[in-house]
Every structure is written in C-alpha cells, then in structure tokens.
Image (cartoon, rainbow, N blue to C red; front, side, top):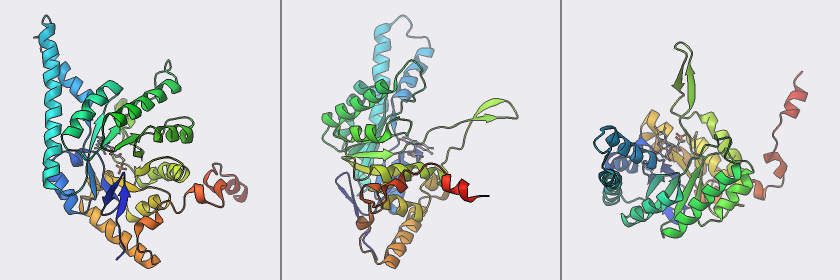
Length: 327
Ligand SMILES: Cc1cc2nc3c(=O)[nH]c(=O)nc-3n(C[C@H](O)[C@H](O)[C@H](O)COP(=O)(O)O)c2cc1C
C-alpha cells in the first residue's frame, strides 16, 4: 500500500482528499461521517456576509424599527452576532469530535468584514481559514484592475490579521490569470483553491422564465482546473488545491500530477454519498502500487509546465492540427 499522506498549507494530511465547503459540511454529524469515510480535512460551509445582512433586512421588514435607529443598530449587531455564534459553535464541535484539520470558510465582499470574521474564527479554534471571495465582473463601470485590487487587499489584510493559514478560493474570470494569481500568492496566503463553482443561470423554455442550472458539476468542468494547475504549479508562492469536477480517482490523480497539493470534492459526495471517498482512496492506492510509486507526494506537480521540456504543449489552444487532419 502506498503512502497517501500529503502536506497542504503546513498540515500533514493523511491523504489528499478534502471535503469542500458546502451543505455537506454544515453540521458536526456530517463532518464526523466524512472523516469516517476517509476525508483528510474539512472545509466548513461558508459563513456568508450576504446571509447575515439578509437576516437583518428580514427583521427590518417587520417595520418595527423604522423610527428607532438605535434599536435597528442593535438588532443588526445582534443578528450578526447570532449567525457568528452558531458558526463558532460548529467550529468548536467539529474540533472536539474529529482528528482532522477543520478549515473555516467565510464569504464577504469587503476587506473590513473579512477581518472582523477572521479574528473570531481563529479564536474559535479553526485550524485554517478559506476565503470565498466572489466579485463577478458584471458592472461595466468597474474596471478589472479595481476588482483585482479588492482581492489583493482582502488576501493581504486577512493573512496579516491572523496566524492560522489562509487559503483563497477564486474563480477564473480574471484577465492576465498567471500574473494576477501569482500576485495573490505573494500576499501571505498559503493556498489558492482553483476554482469555485457558482450558481448557474439557465432558462426554462416551457415557461419562458429564468431558472437554475445544474447545481452539481460534471467531470468535464475539471478541464479548466487542469489547465491552470499545470501552468501555475512551481510558479506561485503557495500551495494549490483543485476544486471542480473531481468525480473519480483518475481525475484526482491527474490533478495531483499537474500540481494540486490536495483535491476538494463536493458534487460527487452529494451524488454518491461519503463512501465515494473510501472508494477513490482505494483506487488511488491501486494505481500507485501498479506504478511502483511509494508516496503520493512524489507525483505532485510531476507533469507541470514549469519542469516540462515541451512547455508550449500546455499552451496549445487552437485545434489547428485537428482541423487540418480532418477532411
Ligand atoms: C450545494 C452546494 C453548496 C456549496 N456551498 C459553498 C459554500 O458555502 N462555500 C464555498 O466556498 N463553496 C461552496 N460550494 C462550492 C464547492 O465547495 C465546490 O467548490 C464546487 O462545487 C466545485 O466542486 P465540485 O465539482 O466537487 O462540486 C457549494 C457547492 C454546492 C454544490
């Protein structure tokens, strides 16, 4: 049996599989079950700034506080405290009932809010913090550079405000990806998580209404992750975690070979249950044994562009040869 242990953000993980932030990680019972089935670390469901603000708005709707701004301020503070307290309780319970790293996750859109949450989360005993930042570049009046600056500010300010390792989970809607993600890796963060997957917009043709796309990823959506892992590994100054479209052991191994220090799973666990982790670990072991590789750590980044003798192969974008061959 090969040794599956890996290092991620300074933690010695028993294997490279992490349960991704989602509804799968929002209670201590689910977390304990994920650990039982082999998850090497857990990223808790994000604490959303939006969710907290919505709670406050719902109270406002009651119309009680219209003329009592002090009371409104108190309720806003109380509601936020309450959401934070439940999250802190989850961290505490998860820590007491497991023996694996517990990574908290917060979603905010301003660096001020992040810092407030980060300090409390560290004090609650989280082993690490994953920042789930999502600013969709949809406002035509906001430049790409100003959005990027917000990400840089958040990463810099949070990682200097806490002593626990900080990861930043990003999307892939940036221009100058390699340059920008390298800049982010110099802010003090310990990992970049490539990439978050968001609610997809779709259309219900029958009723001509906006609808929701598939909540779960498909294995095909891992392609963009593989591309950027291979380009960034060995060039950024932090670890890389792969997220999106990892549904089997083969894909997990490919992501490790291209530079992921760990892989995060959500959709496949939703679809097949936590035991899918045990099956994937067995299969990874079988592949390593068949190849005569003793430590999974030895394959990490083995196929990255930085060490390749044919670096251009990673940047091939057009189907030129394919089209010229097809008659
Ligand atoms: C139902 C659901 C809830 C999610 N909630 C969160 C969340 O709270 N915070 C977060 O950072 N990512 C969240 N995600 C994204 C996942 O953590 C993950 O990055 C994404 O689903 C891609 O991985 P997958 O292909 O294994 O699903 C959620 C995903 C799903 C499907």
